[in-house]
Amino acid sequence: MDSKFLKGKHIVLGICGGIAAYKSAALLRLLVKRGAEVQVIMTPAAKEFITPVTMSALSGKPVVSEFFTANSGEWHSHVDLGLWADLMVIAPATASTLAKMACGVADNMLVTTYLSAREHVIVAPAMDLDMFAHPSTRRNLDTLRSYGVQVIEPASGELASHLVGKGRMEEPERIVEIIEDYFRNVSLKSAPVQNRDFNGKKIAITAGPTYENIDPVRFIGNYSSGKMGFAIAAEFARRGAEVTLISGPVSLPTPEGVNRIDVRSACEMLKAAEGPMERCDYGIFAAAVADYRPANEAETKIKREGVSEMQINLVRNPDIAATCGARKKAGQLFVGFALETDKGLDAARAKLQRKNLDMVVLNTLADSGAGFGTDTNKVTIVTENSIIEFPLKSKQEVATDIIDSITQLNDA
Ligand code: CTP
Image (cartoon, rainbow, N blue to C red; front, side, top):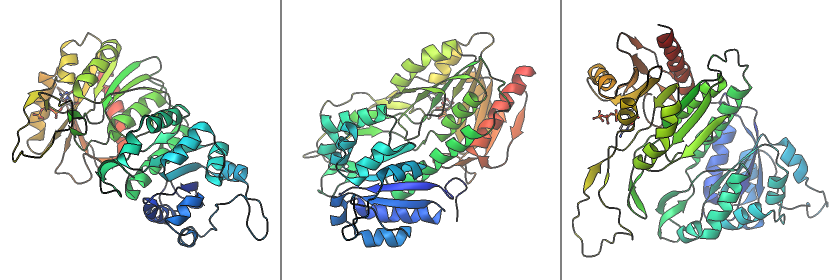
């Protein structure tokens, strides 16, 4: 099952010394199965957690770890590896390696290769929750982000220490999806742009979920991946538009040429979106905004001791599409989304009116392959005077259909 985007790609997989190193074997297997050529580099500490024999058997290549082969004295060139790589992925990335990468401490093959890598670098941190939350780790990750390194935020859950919190390395299947998305975006970017029909136009797009904090470690959120909104942003940018993307928490790279504003909650999203929506020619509301938020966010972690039952009081969040829709000016065109389980068309039409939108992109959870987390979507585009049903397509293709429909609506 080769992947169109991974086949033949050269990937350097860096593995650091952490319990999550066992997951790297699964990650390596998935990458190789999808047709990628993978060169594994292990830090000396990684070998305490998983053996190079396993990794070389799975990759079909000797693992590189030291600067020299002990017996022959053969030198392993980090420069060559850095040039060979189409992508470098470090999973798990420990606090110590992240710190070395941020400061350029080139004392092992992995960090020297990182410093020599010319292409994109993705890190999937894994560590104890306190190490992850430590200001030095946060600062190092911010530094790496500022160098263009893509950080796959660790998930929350039970850690090797048996403590529960944020620090678990993202699952290999998800890391592979993120890698595929990266190569998909690269191939889209390198495709010839025939149609720059949005040259000079301003676009504002909301995308992804919102997280509504309950206390410092818990929130109410949803499964939105942000992929649909990001695909629309990428397509508009390719077609020459000036795009502002207001995104909730997602682990997606920023599409080329797109101005991205990261937010967390619905209130933050509204605040960030108001200006761009007011100034834009086209406003797209693709975010899965939480309809409610906890009335009060606890300042410290809510404890369970002595509490057998609890209620969280919720209050309504602002409706970003409706708020901006009410202020829509002549010449602006606004597009919303509707995710419905039943009576989709009626609900989509009602949303056109209620939110003062010009178009609603309807997807129904009953359609397999549509909705959250998937790479495909099956939509019906509803305007005041038309209903167009599209077959199941990739989210990139759906983005093109939506933008083409906007063009037609504009010309009508
Ligand atoms: N939306 C928004 N702000 C909200 C809720 C929704 O901007 N607080 C936008 C979404 O981005 C989407 C559209 O409104 O474009 C429809 O969202 P949806 O959740 O389907 O509609 P609701 O108005 O919340 O109605 P319901 O969930 O009851 O169907």
